[in-house]
Length: 258
Image (cartoon, rainbow, N blue to C red):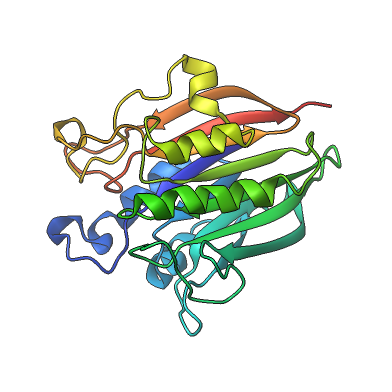
């Protein structure tokens, strides 16, 4: 199965010529050109959800709103509905009160979530789980505790149960939060294929290789359990100097070991 992780940059920021209305077609076309089976989004607004889902007609989706009366589908997970059947779904807030809507802790600048789906492969009846998240961009204490919560959630499942974790972790391989994931049994798909955890930045501020940001690859696709990575790519598609987002999208192909 091919998984994409896509931080699409919120539609609510004033990005001038990079506003969502000016790049939505490019964004959608890049995603569709990769023929993904599963797509995990970060920073998606309701406007973006409506625009994207109207073009992804072969996909079903699951997401959660971050605030009690919010309407933005955070961390949406799209999956091909002719290939997979939804078994269960859920999520939690990355806070000291993970089941209370809208909560945040550890000086987190934003409300952060993790949501997940359990899917059954219709061809093989094999079951697996996909978790999608977006860690805080300011507080290191929050990132570490948010990673810890995700690890604690994942180890509730049998050790060999196939699980996939995607997200914008707002930190690269030098960060303790990434170590927490690795110590919790999560393996980086990009490192498995290419032998490096830090091939360069994935956040690029809409300027690609001209970006001077010092943080390396902050977008991740991890796996654990009976899964094997067969490919992993940083997607740098653009038209001239126009990019689909201020992050490069990333992909990985994995297979369930039976």
